[in-house]
Structures are given as structure tokens and as C-alpha cells.
Image (cartoon, rainbow, N blue to C red; front, side):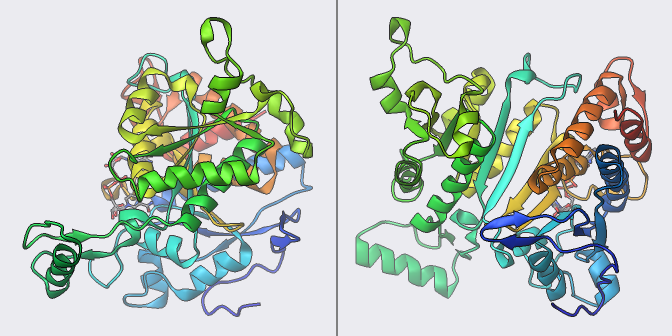
Length: 439
Ligand code: NAD
């Protein structure tokens, strides 16, 4: 066990472990948390209140989260000293305790770190960014039928233009690369261009798509859509699509059907392909594949730009989405806006087992310490975390209570200003209201 310098390991509680490729969760797991900068402390307090209450109400003392504070961002600099934005022991603690919750972090200016979030993802190899996007009735939304959108986006987290391989225009490196490509491969990159590299590997694509399909099977979802821009970027985005289908067919043949196969095999009346029936996959969970192609998970693909239209025009046709890094970045914020914005959008970054659950918005520094903002994103990330632990009862309690609280129009400023007849409350009051409405 690692010895920490500043992290105080609680006396009570036990570690979550991975045994025989399975997450093993004790009744009193120690879960590290990073409070976060700016509005972080406000939304963390609210979140802790709601999560603890839900576990208490769901399991009546039989289960309990034992929180352990770990440090990143401005608080880490306070605790560990100058430029220590992301101490090694923070990363070690997440690795060792497997599951953690995190508030938003300031991006340090200077100091050699581009982004703490990107650094955490890379150090822990958190290769999938998972963002569920669904509507909570009553939340103000810019679209007519926000309830039709209920998707889970799996965004590849480690490759693509986000790999950070960039060369500034007119530098020696940029000039050398331009010359190498122009001369060696008869291309015509303009002189003095800046250069960015977009690596997309078979390994990275396949493990991401595999995660997405596993999630679809375990959670009884209807389809997995590979979103790519392969019509233009054939050997990166196009290859992502090809490798996605390859892993789907190789590892999940009995569970999936491709859209093309579905068109060929199961034409409904008027030649229209019937949608798969929700509920049909429950039987898959015991490892028994369903024989009927109509009850398999449909694996399909869409070009990225068209996908933005599709999510607005035909949202109900999409379910789980798997996509490279940059598409995923755009798509998850756009989809979140459709159901009421980032204040309510949860997220997680996961590896094979390690899971870091986090608010998807930033530190909103102008509201820091005002007890004002919406804690919904971090609370719902906590709900995702509870589901990851298998604590479904507690997760359901929070979701139902958030629905009730929003329907009753007792909400924070961001939602209140868009709702008629709403009662505006502080961040902490919103959390108390959620606890009060919890059955
Ligand atoms: P931001 O998300 O912090 O704020 C943008 C605006 O969104 C805010 O002014 C506020 O109006 C609104 N907002 C954000 N969270 C809200 C909430 N919970 N409730 C209600 N309204 C909310 O984005 P920014 O201003 O671009 O970034 C500020 C800092 O946060 C930067 O240092 C940035 O690098 C960092 N950041 C961190 C993360 C992260 O840790 N995951 C993500 C994005 C930005």
C-alpha cells in the first residue's frame, strides 16, 4: 500500500478492488474525492450531502461511502507547494482506490501543464470519456421534444488531435516536417504552416468501441453508433469506423447485428427495418445470445456532421454512441445543450476498471464561494458513480428526487431564469430540497 505524504487515509472503510476481472465493492468503500477549484467546494458539499443521504436511505446503515480527500488544482498548490498542481500521490490514490469523484479544476497558466484533466486522463489511461445525456422533465430546453434524446456518448480520450502533438508555425520542427512530407510524399503543405498530428490507432479504437458495446449489453440499450468523419479522413476517422465494426463482429457476433445486415435480413412492412425492441436484451445478460436478429444490438455508423442534425431531428434513433476524441468533445456539449445545458450534464473518465467521475463544466470563477450555481452535474456524476459501484437503489433515489425537485420548480439561478414561476434557491438549498424529496 502506498504511503501518502498529505492524504489522510480514513481509519474506517475498505478499498474497492478488482478480483478476477471484476470490480469488488465492499459495503464501506473508501472513495477519494477532489473538491475542485472555483465553484468546486460549493458543488462538492451539495453533492456529498445528496450522495450520503441516498446511500443512507437506500441501505439503512448497511452501506456507507467513506470519503477521502485528495488534492489537485489550486488546493494542491496550497497543500503541497508551488507548481504542484497534480501531485503524484493524487494519481496514485485514484489508481489504488479505483473509483474517485472530482470537481472542476482550473487550468494552470504556464507551469508546463496544458490541462489537469488531460494529464489525469493520460496518467491513468482513462481512455473512455462517458457522458450520458438525457432529459429531466421540466428542465428548460431549446428544443421541442427534449425527452426524445437519451444517449450515452463514449468518447475516445487518449488519441486524435488531442494527443498534443503540435508544432508551431515557422519552428524548426514544423519546417522539417513540412519538407519531409512535401518532398518525400509529393504533397503540398503550405510553407510556414502550423502542424498538428492526428493519430488514431487500431488498439485505441477497438478498446473504446468494445467498452461501448459492453455497456450497451449490460444496460439493455438498443444500438451503438460509430460517429466518424471517415469520408474525408479515411485513414484515421475512417479506420476508426472499420476497426469498430471489426471488434463488434469479432467479439460480440452473437449479440449484435450491423445496420446493413439488418436491412438485408429483417425488412419490416414497406421494406422499413423494424426498430429493435427495448427490453429484448435482458436475456443477453446471462450470456445467452438472442436468436432473433431483431432483438440484437444494432451497430451502425454516421458521419459526424450529419450526426449533429440527426440528434436534433431524429434523436430517438440513437442510443449508445462511440466516437473519436474531437467529435466526442463537440457532440457531448451540443447534446447536453439540447437537454438543458452543462449545469445538468454528468460525466466520467474510465479505464479498464478505474473510474473518475466528474462535473463536465468548468470552475465558473465568477461564482466561486457564492453558494449559487447548479450542483446537478456533479450530483449526477455521483449517480453514475453509484451505478458503477452497483448501488442502483441509491442512484435511483437521487434521480427520482431530482426529477421531482425540478418539476416542483425549486431550482438554482441558471434554471430559474428560464422557467416560468420558479423559486430560485442557492446551491446548498437545492441539495437540501433533493434530500427532502428523496423517498
Ligand atoms: P465554465 O464551465 O467554468 O463556465 C462557463 C459558464 O457556464 C459560467 O460563467 C457559468 O455561467 C456557467 N456554469 C458553469 N458551471 C455552472 C453550474 N454548475 N451552474 C450554473 N452555471 C454554470 O467554463 P470556463 O469559464 O470556460 O472555464 C473556467 C475555468 O474552468 C478554466 O480554468 C477552465 O480551464 C476550467 N475548466 C475545467 C473543466 C474541468 O475541470 N472539467 C472543464 C472546463 C473548463
